Image (cartoon, rainbow, N blue to C red; front, side):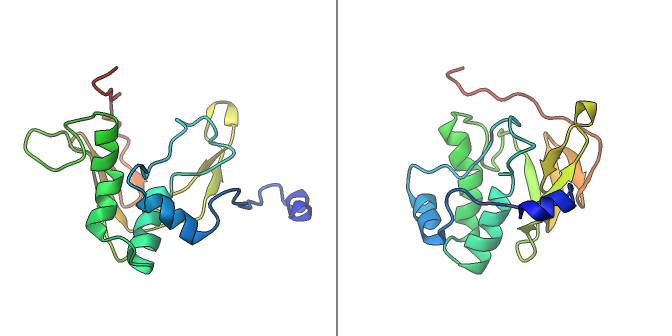
Length: 164
């Protein structure tokens, strides 16, 4: 591995450090206190990549392994997380609720391999992981991504739970 990196500095390799055993991961995902989420708020964008958690959940645990229904998995990454952080008007499609939407093809959704992009200030690198099968992302009613391409609109805002 190291020889390949010396030969090609742009070579990317992935070394899982934890949670390599699918049955152990399944046990964690099924635990009632588990939140299916990952974010370090960008603190390690050049070292690790966790943004595929949701697309992996849908493609592997729902579609391939059939361990969760589509509805269960969507609830895990929407309502369960919103509820845990006391964001009480998010996570469900209901009148009066705020809604960010991801429009996807359940038969096609899956994470792509990470790529290295040098688009941070000063040309610093970061890992980017996109997905297949996502048609649109809509934030506060405004499309932010269509067919994998940014629309250039950033209508997001800071969300705070009731305790903050």
